[in-house]
Image 1 (cartoon, rainbow, N blue to C red):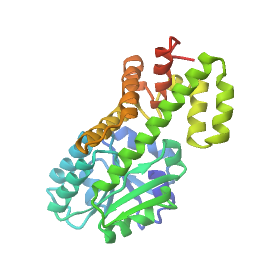
Image 2: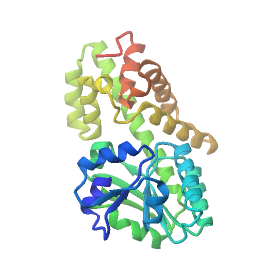
Image 3: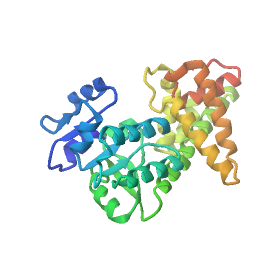
Length: 292
C-alpha cells in the first residue's frame, strides 16, 4: 500500500512512513522509489507533518492504542487532519475511534480493504469507504487506480458500516477455505483424487477458490514461514463475526465450525499458522497427517 501510494498517489510531498517497529519501516526502503518517501522516528512526527494519515493495524487493541498515542503525543493538536483507517476491526471499534478523532476536531474515514498481500503489492485491493461524503471524496483519489482495483462507496453512511461489511465479507473467505478443505479430504479418502477435484474447481470456480485449492495441494498451508492470512488474525475476525451474529439474533454455524478448525491450526502451528491450515486440521479429523 505504501509503495503504491508513493508511486501512483501523485503526492505533493514525499510519503511519510511510520511503523511502531522502526526496522520494519526501514525494511520498506528497498521497495519504495527514491525521493518519494521519508521515515518518521515518532508517530507525532508523522502526524504533525501530514494532512492525511492512513493507519493499518492488526487488531482492535492495536488501533485503539495507536489512536490514544496520536492524541497524547501530539497534545491533541490534530484539528483539521484527516485520518483514514484501513484496519479490519469490530464496527464498534471503528465508530469509537471516529468519535475520538471528532472530539479533537479531526476528520475520519473508515477504509478497510479486501485482498491478500500480493493484491496489495499489485494495487489490486478492494477499498470500502464510509463516512461523510465530502471526506470520502478526499480519500477516493488514493484508492481505485492507486492502492486498489475497485471501491465500494458507503458515503454518508456510519463509519462502522465499512468494517461491518469487511467482517461479514471475510466470513465468505473463511467458509470458502473450510469448503475446499472438506472437499479435498473427501476427494482423497473416497478415491476421486485431489487432481480431479482441482480440475473441477479450476473450471467452475476460477479465482480465489482455484488459488486456495492450489495452495492446499502444494503444501503451502504448512510450508511457509510467514502466513498470508495469519491464524491469529483469522480467529480475531471469526470472533467478531460470531459476536455480531449473536448480538443481531442470528447464528453463523459455518463460521463456528471453521473457527474450531482454526483453533486446531493454532495448537499445531502457533502463530505461523495460516487460514489455509484448516485443510491440515480437517485432514487430521479424517485420520490423515496434517501435512499432505
